[in-house]
Image (cartoon, rainbow, N blue to C red; front, side, top):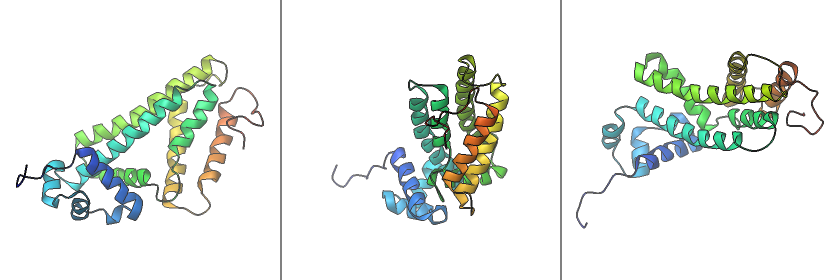
Length: 208
């Protein structure tokens, strides 16, 4: 309507714009004023919707995780062996490289969680829980098929994710000597030694 009040952009558009800014310039350049300019809103208007920058970052992470969750579900629903789908899970988990925007955001939310309230902590735990449950189910399937050794799926999933988190942190911050391909090679070796029930085929999902 002419002369009417301009509608605020959809919440997803704001969160997508925040992720684009992180990808382009890093988290330090993401300000409420800058994001407002990108989406045609004032910083005060953004604060009205998100209450604080911490809440904006957490919602952006939840939005990004939702997209990853959809991709993860698609990968895990594919036909093929459990080992092939585990390789796809690992590939999705590990950052694309230095300053991967999703991991950059995740690290910032982790850092801010020291002072987060119970609701924010519960929401972060829900993100972690989704990755964990999917991995436990995949490990249990591989064990039942005889592809994986008879490990405790929950315990092994906790250890594997701790390994992936540590290596992913190295990749995301660009620690020298820890590029993505080198990290994936370490993970393949860990899985071959501790999980796979049979030798790795030369062209298998965990072959070097």
